[in-house]
Length: 112
Image 1 (cartoon, rainbow, N blue to C red):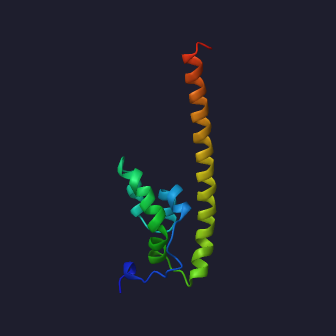
Image 2: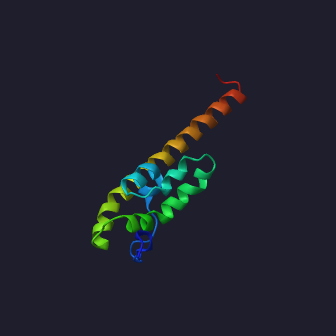
Image 3: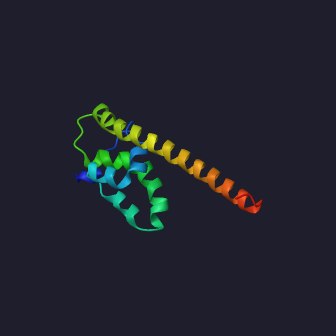
């Protein structure tokens, strides 16, 4: 049986915020190198979602985890960091859009 043929438990499958937000670093840290495809422009827009969805399965297949609980403990740190980074990114994006909209409105109304 090849390493990639390792059975993936249902409890392992699911979304991984760490793989989504830190795709390249997460991939290297989990010995799975498909996330490096996020370095390709345009493909990366789709691939980050693939990595977020399939990342746990790839990490399980490449890792030497004794049980699901150990795997989930390791990935919980990545998940927390990725979720916090996602929230921060959304907040910054909303703030930037607010500043941009305010700037455009002030220019259009002649308020400098």
